[in-house]
Length: 204
Image (tube, rainbow, N blue to C red; front, side):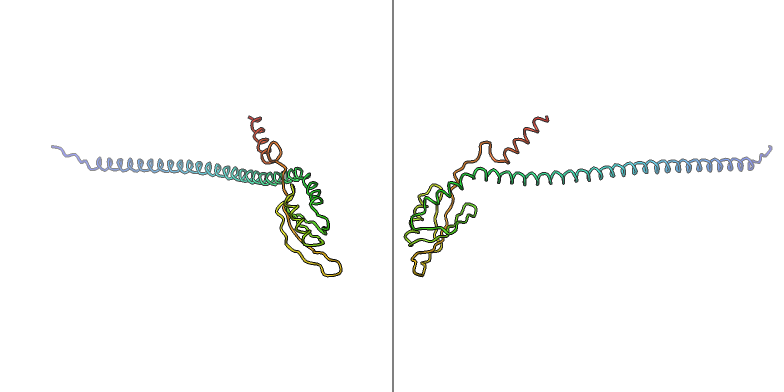
C-alpha cells in the first residue's frame, strides 16, 4: 500500500488560512477605522451645529435683554409723564381755590387784626400778624371755624407787645378746604390706560 505525504498540503492550507485571517483582520481594522472617522465627522458636525445654534440663542437673548431694558425705561418715563400730568391737572383744578382762599382771609379778619405774613405748605396755611388784643385773635379763629374755605385753626404763638402801642403778635395755622372734584374721565393715569387699550384694540 503506497504512502502519501500530506505535510506539504497541510502546510499550504495553514498558510492560506493564516493569510485569510490576516486579510479579514485588516479589512475589519479598516472598517473600524472608517466607522470611527465617520462617527468623528458626524459628531463634529453635530457639535459645530449646536455651537452655531447656541451662538444664535446668545445673540437673541442679548437683543431681548436690550428690548426689555428699553421697555423698562419707557415705563419709567411713562410713570414720570403721568405724574407730571396729574400735578398739572391738580393745579389747574385748584387754581380758582386760591382766589377764594384769599378772599376768605380778608372776610375772616376782624377789625383790629393785621396780617404781616401768610405762608402755605400744601394745604396748611400759616398766618403771622398783630392784633390789638388777644380777644381779636380769638375772634379771628372763630371766623376761621365758620369759614367755607378754612378750617381747624390752631394758635401757635401769641405775645403781648411791650411799649406805648398795645397789641399782641400771633402765629396761627389753618387748613385749606378743597372742594374741587376730579374732572370727568378720571385721572391722567386712567386716561392713559384707556388710550393704551384703545390703541391695542385698533391694532387687532
